[in-house]
Length: 319
Image 1: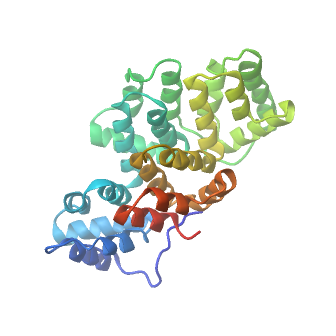
Image 2: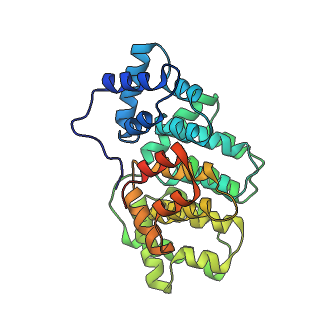
């Protein structure tokens, strides 16, 4: 459930492009107008606006936003105005160039698991177009991630999952038992069968497998991963399971993590809110409220300010 509040009647892409042009021309930038327009258009509508802007004014809207704005507000607006697949391709490229900690792995897992199979194909295509190399090969060559985590990440980003909803319950029961053997008895969640199941099965098939696992053993598989292994691999496997079956759990945790502590992790907060406003922010808000006994809105207000806060709150929507 998205939180993008599209206005009625909806202006044409050309009219929106003209309004954006007026907002960035002259002596000062009209940040409120930028927020009002871009936060209330879907990804498809923003794509039409980008094309109309380029056609009318012979320049890139993304470049103009980058040049006119600054700080965390700039990054949020540019990410919002960017095509979702291209945005994820750029975020993944940045993550591959960092230290390989949990936050960097999150970016790859989100791109591979938290959206549709078609989106991952589009991300791989955008990555090759932008960077002239294969996403899968670059992940495999990234020394920041150690084995066996790197093997998992490669398997996830190269996956071609079936999008159909049909479920084979015999397979679900068999693979639930295989997962339990690796996670509970051997305490080796990095086993080949675990990676194969998580990186190849459809989301509906995985959901059935994880239900069977809980019926057989009385606990969720992600709980057992945490109990039986403390490795980075086990932590990231849990994130993959969440992104594949209940992404609102992961993103609620990401938003909370980005806000807690001495300083706000604005890049992580921006990525989570911008990327999910078009998809499931309503579910994330519900999960956040239940788990943390507060609201995303209250925490954003408490840790951000200015136009950066305004764009985040506009995307989060009313609570």
